[in-house]
Length: 455
Image (cartoon, one colour):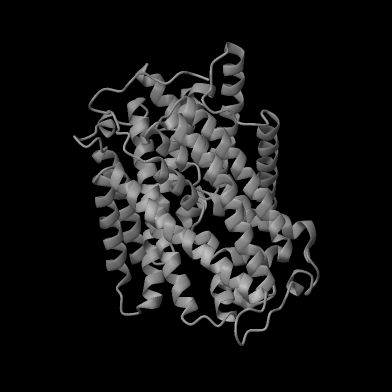
């Protein structure tokens, strides 16, 4: 694996102000989003109780990907992360392609999260102006990211704490309900795991369909590798983050889903908001409002993290001359101001278009980049496979070595191959996959042409 690149010039050097605790909570919080709080019910309805298998497979995939990224990030902390590693392993065009593709996904998602959070908040306070709330969120988190990585890290730390506390409280309430400890609430026991058609009422097809739903809930975990470049003592911090985050993700996801499945029949329409359904069954007042507010926090946390990730990726691309060089400049606080603003400009435009034409703009854009995280994971695993073999061949010391190599890497690639086949098998998902593939090939062609002109 290659040694760390030479120190950047003073005008492009980022800081190292993130604390290890912030990196750990960022890794945990990035996997706990609105997809869990609001979207997990879709997976349950697709597979029944057997959705737990889908979550175990998706969780195992993410843990392997995080370990692979952790190995590379500890050896070479870089704000471009998997883009830099892809360039090292497979050439500059591969690195630029995955970097631009990930950046495009994030700037679109930033706009979607701003509009989505404002819309959810309006459900609690109907008098709230969605356009004004969305604009306020965009301005606020732009300011947070311009204030420096330390402030960003602290906000993400407390956002993640709130989400973790909410999940722990939810699991404890669910366990109390199932044990019959709540007054005036009858426990269903574990009957919902086998009633209504059995544990896997839709067979392997249902498990596969649910896998397509749940795998995207883990998207965003790769931002830990990006943030490692601005963390104190990245060699030790990234290894610690990987070790502590991986098992906690499984505990929180599998714990939450087990409670949902046990309390709410998989055939219930209440699964449109699964966490609220459990809390209402527990007769907790204000359940729907509480979950809505937690989902707002989850979306805003993701917006904050995605803005950070997108700005660091475009900064890294600029440092490597894969984007305009002025995007690599930083101010006296080591903040890439131009990079941050370049990410929110599109966010403001897309937000305005979505608010002007509600339900028409962002869904189209999101459909194009919807599978991007899967491609990023695939390229990251291929990069680790190549760089690890290269490091072993040359005797290069690695601060953090992924266990089970190369078998786990190959297994993860096989799982991703299966997911891509599942995407191709469905008419709706096939369009999404082909759109993402077309976008990828287009970016690769443009990057290669630009490189040849520079040469």
